[in-house]
Image (tube, rainbow, N blue to C red; front, side, top):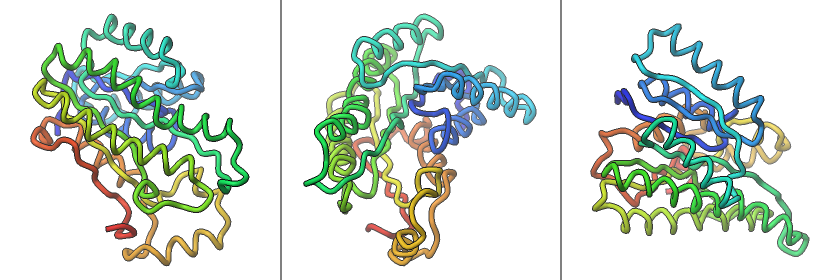
Length: 254
């Protein structure tokens, strides 16, 4: 899945799953844009990827740069994509990975926690996809991959806002796929299950044990499991796949 000369933007990619996705795309030759609210961490990740790809003798042309913008702000997103277009002249891949949680039972959930999660997790996908499609439609080529979640399909107590945001991503993915298929733009999603990250590490052991018992494969997922699936959907080889969602959960949801 060589991506020589392609440009990829991965939101929320200074750490965790987003960082691993950026690494995998860079190894395949893509120039990656590390977008995160923490610019210092984004710059450190970009430098790490640059060093790694050079050490591995990566495909010529791969590079990593850092950007900071609020993915839930229409004005900041528009300015960021204008800068990308000016600097690179193109955008081939958008991975909408940025996301947060603000967990609470519905009766205890605050309005601001609902709004924050929907804005960062769902509105950002709309804003970034809208700007990306402007560029990709002119190119007659593009790959958009959205990060959903198993809870979009199963629900999860204490995560009404998160589950709603991720379910919304599925509907948005299918609609965008239908609207821009004829322009050479594919839009797909991945729905990770329980993936080992800093966020999941903070969960109580009892919760982890219960989750593990619900996974037929008997193990939690790794960030590489998600990144490799995203890389495929972001590649030229996935050209006849659009409007779909790949479930990455070890059989937790079928």
